[in-house]
Image (cartoon, rainbow, N blue to C red; front, side):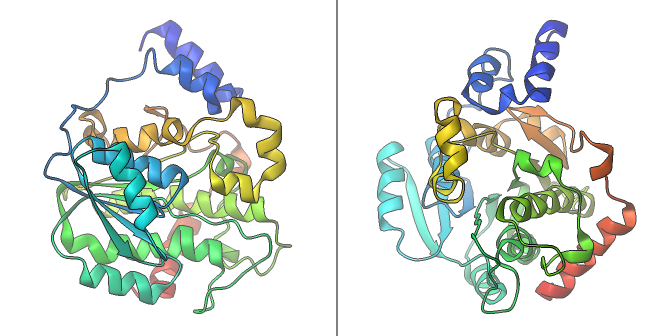
Length: 311
């Protein structure tokens, strides 16, 4: 990237213009090259929450590159599988049942999954209007975005292939929130859906870095990325006013998922570990000093995840 394009990219990032389809349209002219057409041939990818939106778009992108894609979802997945197969003719899509918000479901899924996994994408997401707990007593967003993915990574560790890539789908909203390791279950503060969502997305960024440290030297790389502002069913349901006001500049799910697919398949990301990405470029994890966490807070998050998941 030249000095000029780097400066333009930074301006897009700092002003939020880069989050919408304008940023995507401009950056695609200077970002790193696409993966080889058969980059994932013979590989197996697991994508959670792939029935719609970014997850489905990610599954399609991986399937087009030759991967066998296992979509780990709740409920009927026949429609999603059919849509992915139509978008990626000749692909092999497997529907797996896994409720990422439930520790028991994640543990059973990881135990029963046969064969090695080359790509693991933590995409499943929720934003309930009111504070909700799972049947196991965990706050739903914490369970879905943090505890489930943490346990799935730990449980699948023996099945992650040499050179495997683990990708966490975060959100740009995390930039405005610090790590709250002291209130993981959101019991102290007044519950606000968007704030709670951003809090758990910050936790994902930290967990991705911690997992990268623990897997360093294993041949497995861990990445985290945010999609920008994408027009998905989840946004329409949880943030209807935001969607209405920004509809014309929102990205398509395919545009939002581009970096996740690139991280899973391109050669360049394999040279890095524990980085945070957007539009195929490494990004800072903090823009505000008040959001920076301490080493003790990071350790507190890890220990809490270990305790709450029994991993």
